[in-house]
Length: 112
Length: 119
Image (tube, rainbow over all chains, first blue to last red; front, side, top):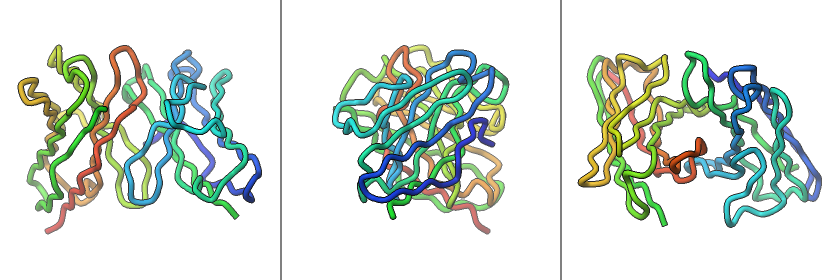
């Protein structure tokens, strides 16, 4: 059972900007723990997209950006491309009994 | 370059156990944490637990406490995840993933192992 809530789906035309929200609570994001984002293409393992709220690993295009405020975080994709069609998950650390690492519910991005 | 290579697909009977391996290459095995994450068909990611090989200490998500055991063999740079009392709801792809020392993100992932529980 996920403790981080994401919208089930978002969509946009090529070139547009889309954002994905990730809402947590005072035991995870709100407690100051970092948020990380992953991209999962169909049939493949997740790939780290953003770490430490807003940092991109080497090789990740700068079209992807992350931010965090209060008990929520966001992933933005600017200049949407067909290859960005995938599932996206946020992840953080949780200090409650629910578990150490927690994932978001996941968001399907569709490029129209 | 870090690589995590997992063992092959498994088919198990309800009530049995499964043990999945994850062999690491590149980097220093003992200096990072290995987590196990599963994904049921058509569902999201679920963190199961992790191990710090240098300490041999494992932590588990409350949901899996008592049913999962995560171990590591430093001599072969291999981590293992054993899940017992399998039921049909445990049918999923199981991934291992690495966290660098001091970080909570998962920067390298194994290719995944499909475990099917069926009578």
